Picture 1: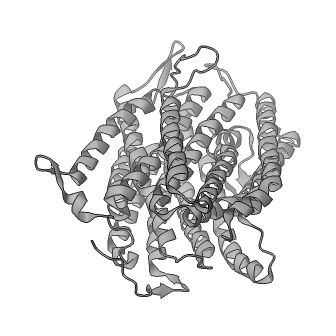
Picture 2: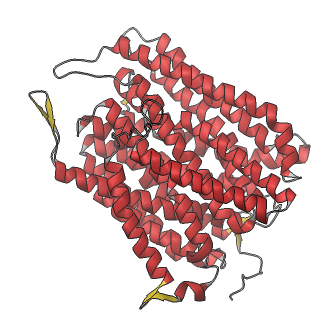
Picture 3: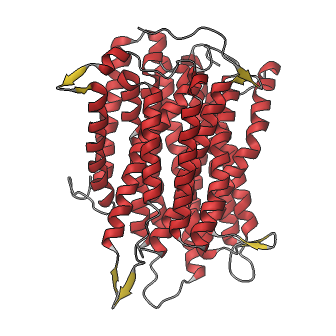
Length: 526
């Protein structure tokens, strides 16, 4: 059984060099992911003529699946594959998926009130989404876990490291919306999606180059067991890859059922196939975690694991409101906002880069701030930071409410209120998301860290579906030959934003009230 090297890792600017390999890999992966996502809803409603409801349903189904599969990817990496092999396999799937998205086919048209779509192009589109979903499942939880393993227990650099890693995510996100959005809406959707694929290829190449800086932390837990033949000439590793390809076909079918609902209990329980699948994964995951906590953990470990579950819940609520930036915020800015600023016109897809831009600007400030507050004894606890983050997330929606109720003379909303809303939202994210990721890696029992990271992303998957459901409250039907009533549209968005603000602020207050108990169950972990 191979041993993990104990030599002090090579460092750059006070952090292990492996952090920067993960930083660049995640930067390019997020470039491709967010570049595609910036265009996705607009592509559906403008090119394939989906209704708002069906567009939200597909975006929610895609988001739900893309964040649910890390549960499986994390488990396979923990038990057999190791994080390095999982990241490489996921990267290959992502490259293929993003390049497949560049195949547009023919635009949909309305013939006598009936929408006619290019069904072959849609099948390629759905299959490409399935490749991306499965690829993220293998890459996303494991690249984050590698970052956590680069730091020792109670290393004071851990939170700063995760904050810098989070900056890598948002460096990719900043350029993706601007470049992919501009290409997609100026030269054709395929150009934007194709650029996302090239970015993912760069991320995979970077990871393959920099593996020596991971110092063995990402290798399989038992290489001999992984190479063992279990079915004729096929090894356990071969079967994992073949099983994943079979799962790809299942995901391909699920993503096409985005607007189908199953009346299991009519009037009470009518989930989509995607939501039903997420419920099954969630129940299995929660059952397994609770079994592990009560049969394999000490009292201290069990209480710390409960805290991890609490952070996953905070994440779920925050991203339920946050993920509307790729749903209702996109259509709000596309339809009822004046796009003119700084002497240029900014498209709705380009404006999705604002979130990543502000995270990038704020990351070094927070990375500098936390250690200094810690030395001064003023550093808020992790749960308190999460509570403040949720409250700020709600306040961001109140900024949009103000803009909706104070339009310009043209009747359109002012773009600068939209920019300010993004700023407030991203301050909230900086208080919650990187801190929560750090808590998952630090508080989880080591042998299930990747699985718990998968649980973090499963919480995010539910938030994607819930964000889409919220977005549908503002759906607008524009009949053939009709035009948008801007005032009515603004009123619909106003009502949605007020409701979302209540969710964020109310949840934040509850978290702050429960902070003393959560801190006690963290048992000294900062």
